[in-house]
Image (cartoon, rainbow, N blue to C red):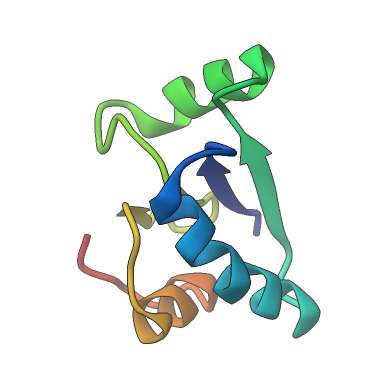
Length: 89
């Protein structure tokens, strides 16, 4: 399972989510952080993964169950997503 967070460096919503994402990583969750505003390769990957679900950042995607979250969310929802549980986006 790969957990991906697509974000922009100057995005205030992304900055708000980063401490929660970093906490998940510290707890052993394999979250791949991909900056899209200044990295063209990551922006292309975001577009391919997003498929019109969100169109912006932050965008969270679980490659195993295809669950995604568009925008900032609460800790409970982010943890459920990271565990592969069903989330409502």
